[in-house]
Image 1 (tube, rainbow, N blue to C red):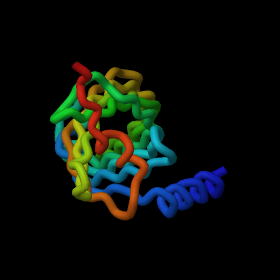
Image 2 (image 1 turned 180 degrees about the horizontal axis):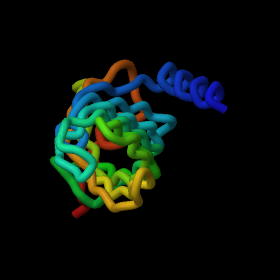
Image 3 (image 1 turned 45 degrees about the vertical axis):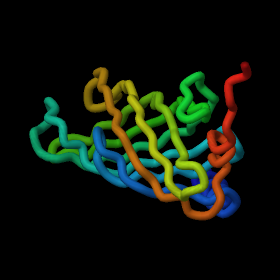
Amino acid sequence: MKRIILILLVASVMSFGFELGVILGEPTGISFRSFMGTSNAIDLQVGWSVKDNRYDNDDNFDLHGAYLFHKKSDIRIEGYRLPFYFGPGGRVKITDNDLIIGVKVPLGLYYKFGSAPFSMFIEVAPGLNLTPDTDFDIMGGIGFRYIFGSTASTSSNTEPERERR
């Protein structure tokens, strides 16, 4: 199963390119996204959790992943419709004292800067920690990425959809 997932991920990156950048928030770190067609993407974030929690007060290592669905929203910037995204995901947080495993549902907006190879996003991700205790958590942030190769995301908002009069 792990081998199949790895093969699909590598094939997606080779076919559609990928985006790599930073996320500032919870977690703060490196953000990776690879589109798998015109409206689905794999999103990974590796970073540090800087918020205090009940497990300890030190910085914590965080690994997040999600499978995202992009839908055009009614929010427009300069005639372009911003894609709204959502999807199931998971997280692993390593603290000094515990291993925290949970699920999350990222909700966000994605913007590609015209023909420039840059994108940005803003998201909030409600989540449920499953170990060592079951409790609610909220994550999110703002991020910027550089686009390597051609990505299917270019179809998301580079073509203007002007209002009809």
